[in-house]
Image (cartoon, rainbow, N blue to C red; front, side):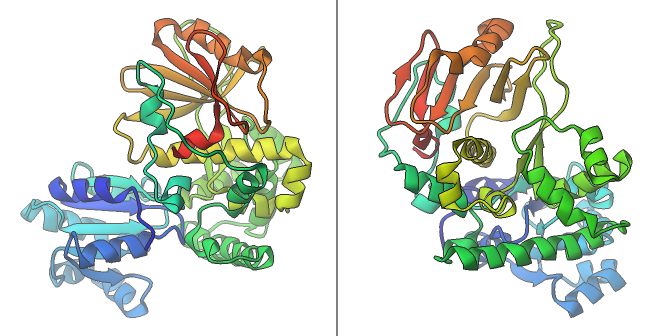
Length: 410
């Protein structure tokens, strides 16, 4: 099994918290990871609610089901039996030993009010995304932590060739896709994957009307990655009410198909864009929805730039799950048009701005947004970097550098 960098933080949570919930999209490797832990580092019994008999027992008599468990236990796809929450709460309140329940779910826990509310203060939440670039290479990435160091640290790492980088982005991180060498077989997998989530997971979460609109919406969202979300425009394009559209997007975020990155605000009164920025959870899925294979991305550099930005953003989100410095990810955009693709903010309020360019060269104009952010943030601004496809580390002034995109997985 390819090593998962989330393992350490997951074991740390199990060591001092009664309930741990590992959430993430289907087919990201949650079941593989928790079964491996249950067999080694965290010995536990294992049950999955994808089994009809287990699901029937858990939903028919949650209290009896929980009381009969051999603890510690792993319960896979726990969101399928919301009634378990109160039964687990009662068991934990009677016995506060850590690591008793390791739950997994293909729906975000915040969308499951019974689970989130009942287990508040008793449960720690962890997210497992598809493989990061470093996990696939056997490297533990430290980019987030290094960006906040007083002196910029740039480890030696061989840059990808253009073809290799495009292939990395097109393949994405889903475990099942890594074994499929032919593009046609990957496309077949993604077709089935999207259909399964929209037809099964979304139906289980909400009884929504016009489910047939969801694939069209997902394709439209894919065409707008990296842009602030304009719900009014999307609703007009699809000819559906804006309230319905927002509900659909929320369900897609709940099932980890899409991710909305909030805007960064200062208290200075500058007029800043308030809309979140849209990402897809995996660039392999994004390329599939855009019908963009490696050849097309190689020819269309503008399209490649959008996909590469999505790739970099998701790599940062993955690294936030294990980095020592606790950060949040934002984007920055003024109403005047100045923007920074991604902004990391640590708990002390310090900022790192990151621009992503799908080009092999960088000029001063690529730093305009970072300079605007520098002026707004003042002493809170640690540094700004432009990630690009070239090989050299190039300084562009105080606290500003161009870095090879391969530094993400150094």
